[in-house]
Image (tube, rainbow, N blue to C red; front, side, top):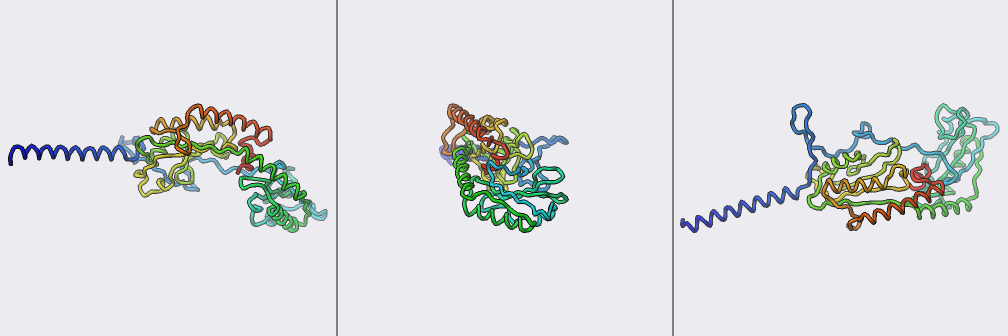
Length: 345
């Protein structure tokens, strides 16, 4: 073999090695970013890197807020029918009232409920065993995000209430249907005009992210895993209330056989304005969270159309939200209040 052939062979080998090295580097560069494995406190070895798993309903991995207790009926957003007991029946036991309840607690798309006047505590409450009640009231919600109460739903409310009253030997008294339906439409019009749900998208600038990497960075900011795969929540300061913020990403990536190899290029931050008390500073924390995640994960904060969100745009949204908060409070439907959480649901 001539010197020229030997030189060409060596050169070819060098080029091939360079191509292979570049391919490996590119593959590593484009691989999803992984969570940093924690240091084993016992022997210094690296533990297995964290991955997202579903939360066991009975033994949750995190101290998630308990579901909120259903608030009492309120004439501001409920149709309320009184259910008076027959004079021959001065009281009804909690067990009897519970047995007389309808099988479903809805009239169409609206929540239906029954409350009894507790003769011991002298307060209205959902009937409970071991208690005695001197009267009842039934209610159906005037509006929610499904729309206003209509005539068919009102009629279903009447039928359910009448059946309950008959079972406990009582007589119901209903408000005028046309008046209540008109009131429902007015409330729904107001709610529709003041219902705000905000969303940011954080997109990867370069390398994609693994579920564990997202989980690790979000956990540093106070987020905990939700029950739904690919969902994390920032809990409210009061246990049992809706989360302040919700972070979401591709649920299929979280459920993959090997989540560490799932490539995620965007995640979302969501704020349901009416569900969260303004004292939580939800929008300010949303901005801070988005900026912190974008900085730590080499991402960019955008709107749903992929357009970067400028600080000036954020300031305008913040100012508009203050006006919205004030308007809701003037209507006695303050954001985060029990009434607001029911109306905007």
